[in-house]
Length: 443
Ligand SMILES: [Zn+2]
Image (cartoon, rainbow, N blue to C red):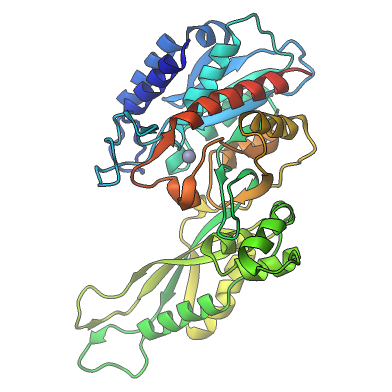
């Protein structure tokens, strides 16, 4: 198959409006079912040799049985759903066009994460051009609700595999990319070895509703605001988890040149103090505190009785949700503000940290070197959640890497207006997954 044909397939996959919906919103399954039909048509060899199952309504699970049953299977995962997209001015081509212009393929999902779906399948299709029998079972899992928590897709796939007694050697998911941090003078390939935890707390102050013409000297809203200000003042302690410490060690040279201007390379502890000034750096070294919603009364002349705020926390490995709750309570309760979990179903502890001493990690490194010779490869952590919050339960190690350049925006590019991927990156992604599958499939 030519590159042009491969690009045309990817463009077509971007045209299906597989938008995920929050619970309560109307979900349209049709584009997912149409995508599944289309994949059957364009990847005939995969559909000939892999077993394909539909799980949880619209998620897809492919498996190719390995010859050596003593080896644990490896999984590659991506997701079919995308976040919504309106036609904003940054869309050089419309969000569901899949059109190619200026060397880029435009479309919602072009990075997150249909490039994964298409390039993983394309890689397997290419490998199956010739006789191919892996020693190890290869599993491809494509969820359909990752953007809303994965409870119907990935969670269901985990249940199905668990029922069959499947335990994975590893999962390769999104969450590491090719980008740079503000202190770096060039792009690096960040392989995510962990993802941060997730927690939202509701802080409520208690007072009396009253008329704005006769306020008390101190109101519940005032207490809530003091409490929020104190929370920002008393940030969680910065700490270095092992992937971030290794990232710092690997990039301290760039740090010296681009930031300190001095010839002495900073220690990881010194780096930690400097990088916390940048939001993206801060997110690497501490459990972050983000005040996201604040509510008072519904009218300008009513003093609210129960003003509240929601505060979202992303925990670094080592910080537990209970530590966060206790820290916030110690600040809030003396001010008369009470603290509750906003939704106990949406509490995620930080993931475990994947090992760098595995066949899979070395396979990722080798595949990166093949497509981008000379690029520094560094471990990292991903500040958001992926479907691997579920898959991690049945796997020894989870690696997070998608070989795509995010550009200046860094991780901010993921759900942005004008999502697009360089043609070269997409073709490289196919080569990357091809090399990865080939090397992890042998014993
Ligand atoms: Zn994603």
